[in-house]
Length: 282
Image (cartoon, rainbow, N blue to C red; front, side, top):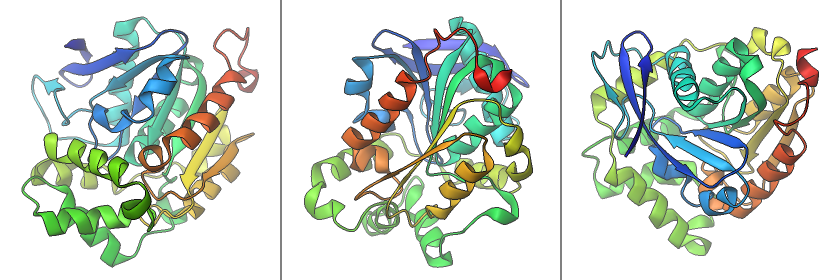
């Protein structure tokens, strides 16, 4: 087990896995994810990159010496800094999805000099700009996401996150993704901390100052974080590119890993760490 240790309002031991070689890419998961969530994208990414997948604080095997319960995007972003410093990553590529997309926005705004590129998936800028899911979909997601949820509740939560054709056409991918949730569940207290932590999130007015080459991605049928949120992000970030993954919902990275990898690798190839300068930081 690989562990990165450091200080972020208390000692933290971040469990992570590392696969492949090349320029480093750090992948940050969402509200109910552990590092296993990236498993369908990982084999292809590892052919080109050094891929680093951590468990967020409160998830999986990451441990806190003294947990104050804070789960804001800012606090999670501080954990990325701990990981990068422990691994000696002076500059790296960074991708986050859903809540992880909020976390990586915070990191990029605070530490643009550490990033060669930023990828924000199925996320939003917070504040009044957010285009929300329906109350029914949000309730279904919360009810089915936690430890102890029954099969019916888990399936209802998953229906909010996927393209309607996925159970029929991509059943193997769906079964795999659901297993990552049941193998490493999050308890109700942890989910409540996270929901509370992101409830006041708002970087909308700060995004025009984001000085990192950025790709924004979304699934074509995202009910949980509607795609208009990604379009808002792309419009607010100078020079940002936007990609919509066809035939995918919120978990586009599991439903359509080949399409997600193609878009991601194309973008990273055009923004290598080896470039002498970051043009957005001039």
